[in-house]
Structures are given as structure tokens and as C-alpha cells.
Length: 476
Ligand code: SF4
Image (cartoon, rainbow, N blue to C red; front, side, top):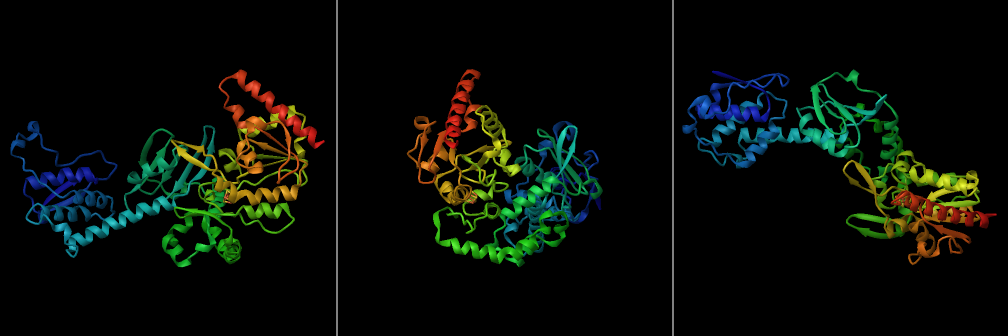
């Protein structure tokens, strides 16, 4: 029996196996012995070169089907040490008279190989689905840390998925065997740790719970399927398991609400549906706001963190309507808290508005965005997004009854006046619309931030303040 000691990765095994084939070593003659994966690479068999062996001129070529290489790469990640012997048995047979072996699914070796590959794929999928980051703050900012216990050696294989998904965060995924770290530009790996190194809970967990509650669709609940997809062994690391019982309890009532509004379909496309948002019949603004938190009337809720409803005094004199929440607002759950909101605050102060009299909201209540590198880039809401969300805005107007409405930007203005409205032509005028008696349209404060130079920014800012003064005068 010959012992082949090698670093247990596919590349090292492949090199060693190729050498064993060259030497015509039959499977039963080899004992495959793994070195620790943290030990430097010391394979017994090295790739032949003219210089090292002087025999490469007589090196035999072994051809194997491409799908064997793919299968072997997956099986290499399995936790069973016997996988290397299994792979070599299959390799031996493929190169010794059974080139079509992989097509014989009832063969014991082939069946076992597929079983192992399936188990690895399953583990990769589970890690992608059940890793939950928790935030740690230090003097350098935030670092997000997750704990996961994979069944197989999948951490390195899976890390790129998390880099792509969470490129803008700095994170670590800790596991008992291997830890992956992303510092915003570089991926690295260290040895495994025990669970005591993982943080327990934090604000990001609250954010995730809000997101989970929003994407939870009561009409599609299948408890058994849910348990099969989310096996109990993962529950201890998943914050959402704490809210599932309450969501299941609420499901029948929420389905009823959804069914009542099922006659209000606006559009359907590629499996997505746009309905008129189901606003409850109530005179309570806070109840309407609470109901909006579980709105799934259009597809925008799927990729946003949470509904961002309007905020301000119930009987505000002035209502400002923007387009939709941005990146900051989506995370904070509040309208106009990002850079555009700060610009609005400054202009309101300059126009001598009492900020406490102003209610701020948006035509669309969920953040619509597309990924670009590490950033979430704002996407303009479509006509059907606006139509679906309009009932929430109508309810805000009906319940707040502001004396004057200010439309910030063309989306808000077209929601109030119709698609033919042009802010560039009619800004700063006191107008009337079916939704509100006194309306002033102006630009969105974010457009001031996009001005190319200081001079045009200053000019546009003054025009913006003037438009706000028109609204203030009308309100008084
Ligand atoms: S954007 Fe409006 S209609 Fe669409 S899901 Fe969000 S709250 Fe509901």
C-alpha cells in the first residue's frame, strides 16, 4: 500500500492523482492521507517537468469527461475523507476501459459521487440563505460578523457570493473550520474559531427583522415547506425565527385584506403584479401609516428595506411631496433624512418656514434601486409603481388636509397634476389640482446637489427658496 499525503484541495488531489495514474497505481494500492488544510502545500507527487523527472517525454495523456472534473471539484468540498479514494476509483475506471462510466447512474461509485456532490450543493445553498450578519462598531466604523456551521468545506468556495452581495460592507463569516473576511477591497481567510467569537445581537438584526416582516407573504405560507427549507438546526442563528409565530398568527387576517383588494389590479408583468395599495378605512393617520408597513401591492417592497411613510404633524399646514425614499431613508425608515433632506431643511429655514408645520412624504413609499458595484443606485419609479402607491398619498392628503401642497420634482408633480405637467414651465406658481386646492410645484432638492458648479448650485438654490416662499405665502 502506498500512502499519498496531500493538501486536501481539488488542485492538489488532481496533481497527485495524475502522478498515480502515470505510475499505474491501482485504487486498492493507494491510501489517500490528508494534510491539514492549514499546513503549507507539501504534496508527495508534484507535476512532472523535464527538469524534475527527465521522464516527461514519455508522460501518458489521460483524458476524462469534463463533467467528471466538475463533479470532482464539488466532491472535493465534501467532509468525508473517503471522497479522495472514491474519486480515484472513478478516475481509474474512466481511464481504464470505462469512458462512459458517469452515464451509469446505478453504478455504486457513480451514485455515491452524485449523492456527495448534491450534499455539497445543498450546504452551499444553506450558507447563502442562512448567514446573518451582526454589526460590531469600533473606532474604524462598522464591521459585520456572522456565525455559520457548514457541514462541508465550502467557506472559500462560497465567499465570492458574499463579496458580490455585500461589497460595500466590511464583514467576516466565522465558522469552526475556516473564516472569511472582506475589508471592502480584499478577501482573506483565517483558521476556524469557536462560536464565542460571534456577536449576539444588534441594530442590523432589527433592520433584518423589519425587512423579513415586509417580504413575508401571508398568502404563500406553507408551514411544512418552510420548515423543510429552513431546517431547525439553523434556527438558533436566525433572528427572524423569533417573529415567525406572530407572522403566522396574523397571516389569515392579512390574506383577507389582500383578497378584498384583489379587484384592484393595475398591471401584471413577468410574474410581478401591481395592485392599488390596500388602504384601511380609518380616520387615524397612525393606523394608515402602520398598515402601509406591510404593503406588498407592487414589486418595490421586495428589494427595499421597509416602507417609508410620511412624517409630520397630523394637521400640518404644508405637505411636501417628494418622489420616493432614497438609500438613507430606506435604511432609517424616515423621509428626507439624507443629503436631499438636509438641503430641504436649509431651504425651509431660509424661506422662514416653521419646520414643525410641515408634513413630508413621497409619491412612492418604497426605495426603487439597482445595484452598481457597491452602491444602490436610485431608479425612477414607473407609472404603475406610482399608480399602485397613490392610495397611500391620497389617504395622507385626506387625513392631514394641508392648506398647501408642495410637489418636489416632476414625479410628485405628475402624480398630482398628471403626466403632461412640466415643472420647468410651471414651477413656483400657485395652482389647483383634483388632489389638492393649492399646489406649488418646484424642483426636487436632490437636483440642487447635482448642479455642476457652485455658481449654478447657488442660482438654483435661490429659485428653490423663492418657490417655497410662494407656498408659504399661500399657506398664510
Ligand atoms: S411602493 Fe407603495 S404600493 Fe408599492 S409596495 Fe411600497 S407601499 Fe405598497
